[in-house]
Amino acid sequence: MTSSSLPTTLDQLPPACDDIQFNYCKTVACANFSRTEPQLYVLQNSNLQRPVLICRECGAFPPVLSNHDVVAEKQRLKLEQYSGLAACSNNDCPHNGLPVLTYRQYYHAFGFSGERQRYRCKACHHTFVDPWSSSNNKHQLQQKLLAYLFTGYTVREICRRLTMNPKTFYDQLNKIAARCRRQLTIFDARLSKQSLARQLATDLTPLQPQSNNGVLWIATAEVNSGYVMSQHVNYQTQPVTTSVTHHDAYQLGTRFITPHNNQTSNYTPILSQGLLAHIDTTYRQILARKNMENPLSGNVTINYPTKGCLIRPQYTVYSHFLYLRELLNPNIPTLTVFMPQETLLRSACLSVFIDRINNHTIDPLYVVEDQQWQHGQHAEKIDIVLMGWWRDRWAFSRNNSGSKGICHLGGNKKDQQHWLTIASHRAATTYQQRFYDQFNHMVNEPRRKLRPASLLPLLDIYRAWHNLCHQNKAGITPAQTLGLMSSPMTLEQLLQ
Ligand SMILES: [Zn+2]
Ligand SMILES: [Zn+2]
Image (cartoon, rainbow, N blue to C red; front, side, top):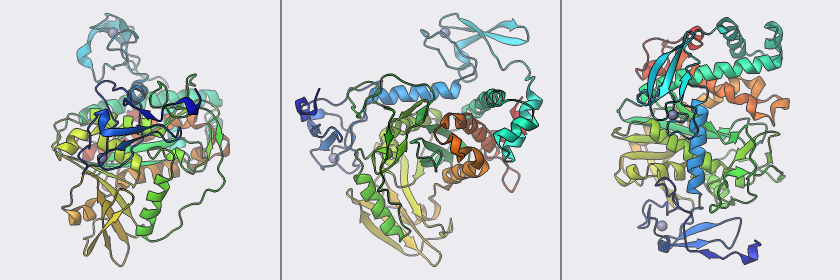
């Protein structure tokens, strides 16, 4: 179909999937906020590059999204988290892929196979063994490998020291990552039993900052402990056959980006300037994107990875929040989410937690601060400025050392003082920064620039180490701070 034969207006929203309909006005103060009747909107498709909903009430123009592809992407994230764990492997069974570790009620213990525990699925009667129920005979080797990796040795040096070839190295790395996912699944499940108020920090950053390979990395951490609850990337190692050139929310499989090299030469980095000007520039850059909720549709260069497939970031980010919503105990009285100024994070967080927005049990906030701003200091004088196309209400504070701005995205105008003092997404940001520092040789190695797949096992290992083993100055791990474990885990215990 050519662009001239396409209708310029559509009469239906992209169809809902699993009760999810994310296409609606996202202006919290608008009468149409969260309403999904198509007649409330003009559905414009005249510009193939920018199909949008236009709200008849407030004029906002949120990009449209395929609900089906969000759900499919969330399924992908879930299967990756559970991959390698003991679970029903029957594709036609409703328990397929759901691990015994967290879904014990779906399975019966069913004797042993050698020293390994056997299970039977209650739904389809399929039986399987738990590969992790016997002792790890590569334990010593894996411990050495990890120790070298965390001390900054390159893959080549580690292979030489352990007399192994690179293939064996990556095989072992993948086995370690699967063990780490298993440990994390146990502690994440404990976390989801807690029903205390939660404060979270989210950040979104390139996985390999010097490669421009289009792979973005989103991480969300609990603010006070630093425990990283989940992290995802918009990249999968399996290729796909169904990618579409232009994003079309009415087509299945639209989340996959077609392999291409997208070079733009007029990239201008943000210059250091005042906080207010910085926020204003960011709003302009977001408005200039072809799709406001896709950071890769702006003025960016993409050098497409040599293998695997990129996913439009909005699908991974919406799914990341869906994943979090499932992980959090639904009885949590209040939820707070601190994030950098990014329309995609705002839209995804508001859309997924729409019920909490409507009953005022969530505080989503943009936080922008100088390097010099000292966290926790009292905000003395507060200035209110309405910013961006949306006239977002920002509160600013400045003192001798630096400045900070916050914007409550749920429309709450109170407690500015309080938020200026406590709001910060540093828990997520420093976690990501430490990853770059810790694995600098792997993240930035020139030969790896278009091969992000080799970093994926490292992400699981790093999250496990960070949550369960890494101690703060007081000798306490993030998991201990949350009361999920009583003492730090050693690398040896992590690999058992
Ligand atoms: Zn509206
Ligand atoms: Zn089954």
